[in-house]
Amino acid sequence: MEPKRTNKFGPGSPAFTNTKNLSNLYNINAKFAGTGGNPSSLSMKRPQSTPKVESTLIYKPLPKLESTLFKKYYDRGDLPIIVDFQGAIRKIKWRPDGDPRSLDYHLYLPIFFEGLRETEEPYKFLADKGCDELLEKGEAKILPVLPQLIIPIKKALSSKNHEIMCKTMKKIQKLVVSGEMIGEALVPYYRQILPILNLFKNKRLNIGDKIDYSQRKEENLAELVQKTLEVLEKHGGEDAYINIKYMIPTYESCVF
Image 1 (cartoon, rainbow, N blue to C red):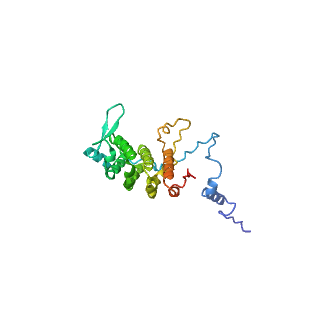
Image 2 (image 1 turned 30 degrees about the horizontal axis):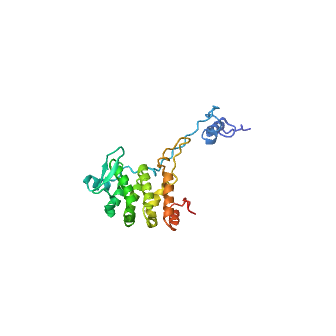
Image 3 (image 1 turned 90 degrees about the vertical axis):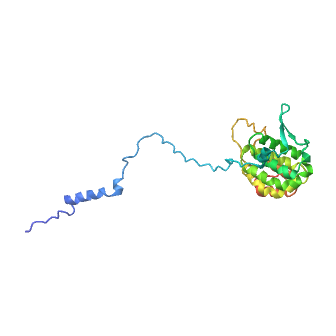
């Protein structure tokens, strides 16, 4: 009778068992099964910080303003205006006769509107007060000069400087009411003036329960934009509201 032969590497043999155990080492699912290595702490996890959204800088003022014709003319002595220091309040004095109505508005009024972008003294003071007096006493001389004022106004608003924008919008309000038909004549130029106003129309400062003193000084941009648009609509004729609504869709009429 022949002896029973056994396979050294068959099922049940020690070599087969060891080979099976070795194959488990290369089985990824079996290797990472279980809870080994997981944290066992019961404390709450730290909240993950959300990445900070970068600012678009859309409201940031221009870093550097180009020199204006007003400064050039004043330094050269070509402007008929000086600062009058008599008394406690600074005033301006016109040369030679002290009456701005005798000046050439086609030449000087656009230069004074150009000076609204000045931030240094005495240019800032002279341009501001000079524009006021020229608009108050210009009457019929202002309407023919209106097209020459659009570019200085647009440059001043596009600077995005808070102080310059506030002054310019106040001058727009005075310009519209300074003479007849000026509001209607300004309607075709809304496309140059209103886009920047649309940007700052709803820009409000959230200060909680504090007091906003800029309202008393009329330096709140959002309120100035709203007031300027209302003045333009009231004095711009029947086509004013349609054109304002086209450029600023969120504007609601103050007349209808």
